[in-house]
Length: 454
Image (cartoon, rainbow, N blue to C red; front, side, top):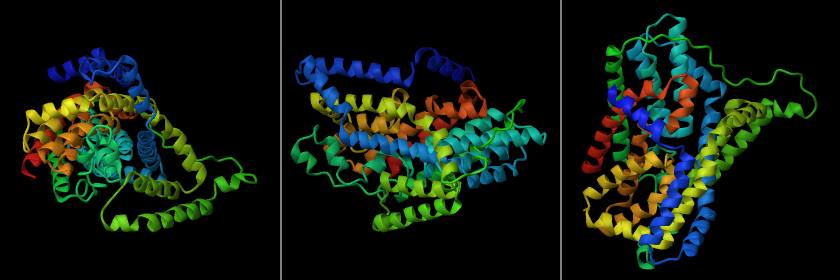
C-alpha cells in the first residue's frame, strides 16, 4: 500500500489540473517547434497553433466525443437502467461476489459506451454499498469502488473508442496526416479503416474477454482477503420527473406517445442511413451517437425526463469542451513545424515491425497521464503513430489499437476520470488506487501479450 500512497501524493501535489497541463504542453510545444522545427519564426508557429485550434474537422470530432459522453450519462439515468442496477445489487452476498457483480457488468457496458460505463459503474458500486449497509453484509467498499472504475481500462478498445471510431470515417486518416506526410505517402492510406479490423476484430474481442475474465477472477480472490470497511452512506437518488399539474403545451414535454414516436423515427432513419455499414461491421461516431440519442429518448419515456438527464449530464463535458481546442492547437504546431516527422523518424530508427506497437503502447500510456482524454491524445499522437506505422509496414489497425490499449490502461493510475466515481461513491482516490494499480499491471500484461501474438 506504500506505493499507492506515493502515487496519490505525486498526483495530488505535483500534477496540475488537466487544463493547466494542456496550457503547459502548448507552451512546451511552441518552444520545441522553435528549437527543433523547420526553422520557423515565432509568429509562424503562432499561426500554426491558431489554425490547429480552429481546425473544422477536429472541432466536429470534439463535438462527437462530447455527445458520446453526455448521451452515455443520459442513458444510465433512465428508469430501465435504474431497475437493472437495483436488480444486480440483490445478488450481493459478500465482498468477493459483490466485486465481480460490479466489475463484469461495468466492463461490458463500458465496451459499448465509455460515458455510460463510467457513470453506470459508479452508481452500481454506490448501490451495492447501500444494499450491503441495509442488509448488514460486511464488504470492502474501496474494492467495490475500484471495480466500478475498471471499465475505463477497456473503453478505448470498445465501440466508443475515439481512435478506432474516427479512422472508420471516410477520409479521416488522410485528413489527419495530409499536412504531415508527403502526397505519395498519404495516397497509400485507405479511405477508412473499418471497425471490423479494429474494435470488432477477433483478436481485439479475444483480448477484451480475456481482460474481463482475469479481472473477474482477480477481484474475486481480492475480496476473499480484503477486510470489511465501515459504511455510512445515504441513499443515492436517481433523477426524477416533475410531479406538477400540466397545462397546454407542457403535456407534449411529458407525453410518452410523443417521445416514443420521435424515438421510433430516429431508429427508422438510423436503419435507412446505417444498415449497409452495420452489415459490414463498420461503426462510426455519428452512427453510435444517433443510436444512443434514439435509445435515450425511448428509455426516458418523455422529453422532460430526457432533458432533465441531459441537464445533469452536461457538466461532464466541461473538460473536453475547453481542453480539446488546445490539444488541436498542439497538433497544428507539430504537424506544420515538421516535429511529427522528426519524432516519427526517431521511433522508426529504434523500432521494427514487432517492437513499434509495444513502443506505441507504452508511449500512449505515458501521454495519457498528461492528456487524460482519448480524443485529445488521438489528435496529438495519431499522426505520429500513422506515419511510423507506414514507414515500418506495421498494419494500421494494430498500431491504432496499440495506442488505444496504452491510453486506456493508465486510466487506472490517472485519477482524472475517476472524479465522477469518487463523487458518487464518496470514496477517496487513495482508497481505490491500491486495487486499480493491480488492474493496470494485469491489463498491461494481457495487452502486450496480444500485441506480440496477434
